[in-house]
Length: 158
Image 1 (cartoon, helix red, strand yellow):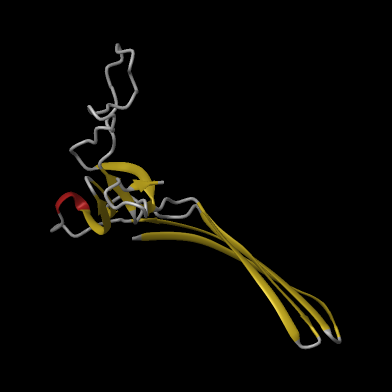
Image 2 (cartoon, rainbow, N blue to C red; image 1 turned 180 degrees about the horizontal axis):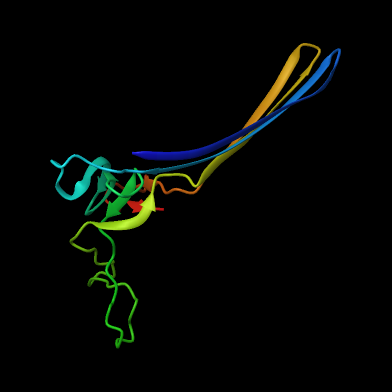
């Protein structure tokens, strides 16, 4: 596995007075990874590291050679592919109006990995009492979820 990352942290202690102290910190990081190789004994060069299924649908997270760790696969909806059809690009639906799902597991183009993470921390102390706060941001990446109201609804990658 190849991992490349950048981590930047800045901490600032604002000049202190006898009964007053304020501290401020920032951090930012980027992490990229790629699975370089898998054992030859694995068929297809990938292994399922997590999966979730609900009803007729399932989401699988794989470690797959040549891709980032945590790539998502699922049974995706089918679309009209005939360019001469007036419905070209539209989803194919069944007699109940529900999308028709493919029979083959397909790569979604998504991973669990964040594009970047960052945060801010601060603390304020006066007369021996400290108040602190932290903000943590994770941007990018996809989460696998299923509606909490019904396990018979399809799982999605959002």
